[in-house]
Length: 119
Image (cartoon, rainbow, N blue to C red):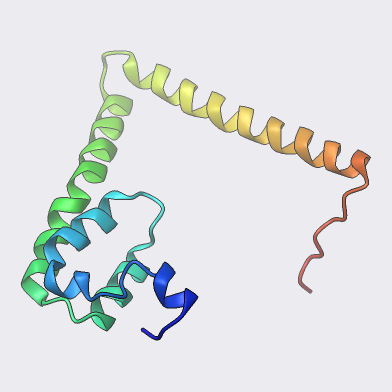
């Protein structure tokens, strides 16, 4: 992938995903902020074989799928837990919105330049 500082900072420069495709795919799928499209693209570029890629995707995606299913099941169950989960998720979202507004107001008062919107 080239030389210099850019290649030294790239975790895929040594061909590790191609040699250890299953492990690389599992690790990339477990991280919740890495988009699936990016992992697919890197796997294609580094020539990860199909079977290790598919197996790594299945294993790496399992924790997120199980947690989504458990959360959804708790929301529709008659145990009463679903209401508390929904209330907690709504509370977290509300706190995020309030903190974003406070932060925006603080930045405006401090004189920090605002980001321009694309038109």
